[in-house]
Length: 375
Image 1 (cartoon, helix red, strand yellow):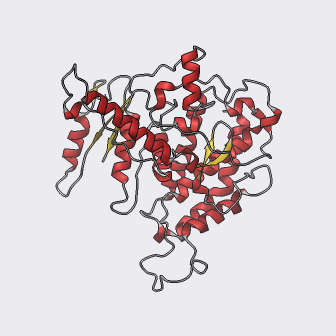
Image 2: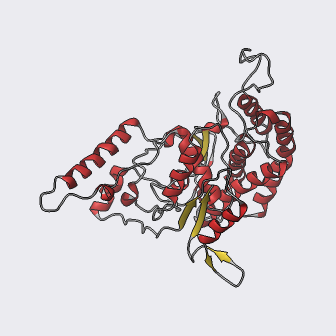
Image 3: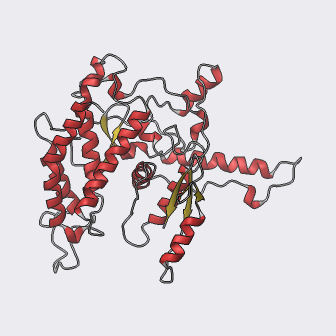
């Protein structure tokens, strides 16, 4: 990235890291698992690196066109309107984008854009491990009012706003209102904050998808010319129903895992951690699933110039659009369940059994593949 971008990120680090670590040490009992300072800071760096890697893959920080005056000023709105979200597997209807990235269209907005990415990464690196509750088991009076005992996330939001809602050059314009900063992501098309809820398909769309799938299975069962398919030959959608939590956590897992970073989900028993990771890895392991096309986990955020389903079908059928070529699956995953009888030797043997010899003393995935492990 340009040197001025690096310098700006360094200023943000120096301005906010110490205060964030002090906040976390003050609220140690409100973390699911107490995180070391180095782990928190490295997570912040890894999330930023994930954004930088994808920005570079889409043209980088080089100027690809003259600044657009209409889009250049972030004064109009600091949050984007809702995107049109269709079914999660509409990749076959995708039309490749020919638009420049936001930062290429608006090079003068680079500091502001990086500031928002930094705030997003800061929010999850520091706040992602906090309990939603405000009390600990040591509190004698858990019935105090929210005003006397505000949730720790509210305290963290106050910290983020105090740190970054300041004047230039390191001030960042955050979304107005009382919504938690964790409820927003960075819309890479507009360069503004947008609500995660914008990416969740409507109930109507989910019902329509389920009905269409049901008709497809019914038609195959009622075909007279061919014998009915076996039960395991019928494809049934077993993916999680999209919610704000599943969308944003799947994005964070994918962003980290695809950049070779380990991810640990913490939370109470039965909150769906294993199911979420399993569903995320299944989607990443599909053809093109690790990219940024429509229907992918990262595509919802990083896809520029995304069209809705109807517009895409019209362009394809009229010959005006060309479908994006879907690359072969790059991600393969394996899962291992631990118990009291699981030894380190068994764990090592399991991991090595899923890899191939790449050199004299080197094991790794097959060429062109990435391996994710679920433990």
